[in-house]
Amino acid sequence: MVQQTKSKYKKAAFGPNEVSVIFVLGGPGAGKGTQCEKLVNEYGFVHLSAGDLLREEQSRPNSQYGKLIADCIKAGDIVPQEVTIGLLKNAMKESVAKGKTRFLIDGFPRKMDQALKFEEDVAVSKFTLFFECPEEVMLKRLLKRGETSGRTDDNIESIRKRFVTFIETSMPVVDYFETQDRVVVVDCKQDPDVVYDNVKDALHARGIHLKQ
Image 1 (cartoon, helix red, strand yellow):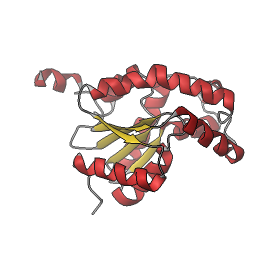
Image 2 (spheres, helix red, strand yellow):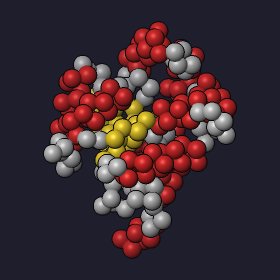
Image 3 (cartoon, helix red, strand yellow):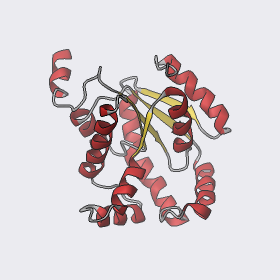
């Protein structure tokens, strides 16, 4: 079994001793970005938001994927995995070249095939931080953010589509990693500082400590 696992992941861009990858999942508005910002400051993580990378690529002049990404984001659909994984891999390579090897990958993987393909081609994750939050709380947060964010998907129609997409496609990813004891669940309906204390406790329990 060990040999099979090694064989399966031998073509990954980064080995388990080269990088530490933590997936950060939760419904839209669960507070993933807020918590990741805090972790970057104290733990020296590189925060890679799949959504931000896609939006940057969408805005890049002459991007071959720009229109595709824009259409997917506006409709609340998932961008093809080859595009997202390629952007994440390139961002990780840039950071590793600068000596940064701890990664929080936020809002990814959003589908089972993304999870399997990323771990096969890029790196095997340590575990997934799953931010659990009631839908009504997330909706309120996103509508508030939409007043100033300028994001095309911060409207009630897109938000509700994103909730459905998350339940149907992302929860199976969480369930899959849970069978491997690679999920840490954090209650995110509380005050952000309380949530952060819980996140830190969870990281320490998994052997992830403050940067030196």
